[in-house]
Amino acid sequence: MKAIGDIETKRKFTAVASGALSSGDTVCIKSDGTVAKAALPVDGSLGTFTTFESATVGTVFAAYDSNAEKVVISYQDGGNSNYGTAVVGTVSGTSITFGTPVVFFSGAIDQNYTGRTTEFDSNANKVVIAFIENGTRDGKAIVGTVSGTSISFGSNATFETDPTTNVSMTFDSSNNKIVICYQENLFTTNGTQYAKAVVGTVSGTSISFGASVRVNSITRNFQSYAAFDSTNNKVLIIFRTFDGAGALQVYVGTVSGTSISFGSGNEVGSAVNNLGTIEYDSVNNKAVVFYRDDTNSGYPTAVVGTVSGTSVSFGTSTVVQTKSIGSTYLAINFDASRGVMMTACIDTATNPDDVIINELTVSGTSVSANDGLVKEYYLFLSFAYDSVNEKTVFVARDMADNYGKAAVYIEGSGGDLTAENFIGFADAGYAIGADASVELSGSITKAQSGLTAGQKYYVQNDGSLGTTADDPSIVAGTAISATELIVKG
Image 1: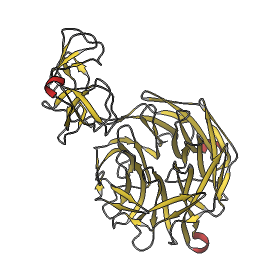
Image 2: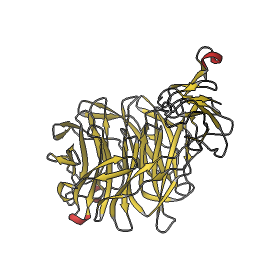
Image 3: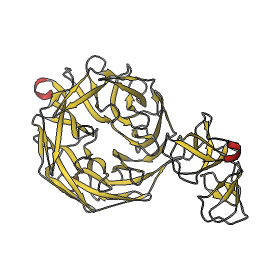
Image 4: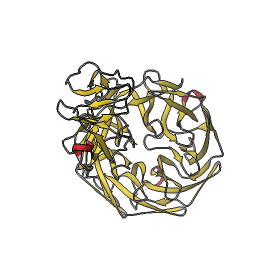
């Protein structure tokens, strides 16, 4: 915490904002000296699910087009011969609506059980979808252009002609390249499952590829997930390898032109891990690995990674839920506005299976998890973060009818409000991690609305103001106009 001038006369001080603040927000001071919106903890929830495909869908993957300000979902349409299909979603408040689905590949595409196969290229302002053609099992990609509530596509391009599976991709914003990682599945012919990666360049409505490279020298790899470290400008790829115990390995990749090179693998702990995902926390400048730990009852587990050069080191792992989860479906995405990592997994001990959605928070080289939100009977999990509306969209197949559905995640509050720690009001809007100026007791906050002059106001449990006390009872101050209040802290 640091003071601005004379607190007695100016009645303000600054402290680091542990979460985003808006002008006029009620503020409490936390035990670590940071400040946050004054609110009690509230669990997250999901808004009403909206159906985007009224037929059986296979794996679903979502991305956010920040140019068009739309969510794009790609999926296997079981109601139309398993054709590759995409649909555009619009977020409004806590709801999402959809345009008409569009076929991007008039042929059957194969299931892709993990990874992220829909990505946004912010340089070209295009959506890229990677997929596996059923039958040939070629790895392909296609470029989409969003217009209004629809999307159109160019011609598809092949990045791998050998049998392909477990595709994932990310966008390298420092080199303006799409990077696709995947498993070259030659297991049926010569017993090998190579981990490979390829660099793609979007031009207009087309994408072209450099030569694919092997991520490691290991002949058996399984699953894949990719993320981009925007601080170190590195591509992060995770594979489960079968060299001995079968641990998860994270590889740091460096893009140069239309190629990519990798450092040595970095093992995630010493556990045998069935499935792992990775995402980058751009607020704390850390990678987060979310995985199933097969040496600890199959519990969902998270660990923080720090990238240095072409290697990554890990802190101590944290169990996210003490529940055994499925071996195939995990999802992860970063909410930059709140600085939290969103994760989803499936609790296979329930009937029907429960989906567990958690918020993870990074602190140094450690990570903590909230209690989690449980939703019954969903499969094929994906997230997209809408950076304009600052909302996370959850996408899945509803196993009750097998339709494709999506809902807006309504964030919980990690508030730390107590009867003693309310201190005043934010004098402006502040991003997470910024130095926030707080108006203290005796000052006048002028960023309110709808107040009644002469009325005493109380801080409510959600951080708003009310004319009756909540529990705990905390006096915020007395209004002197519709927009002004004398602060009492």
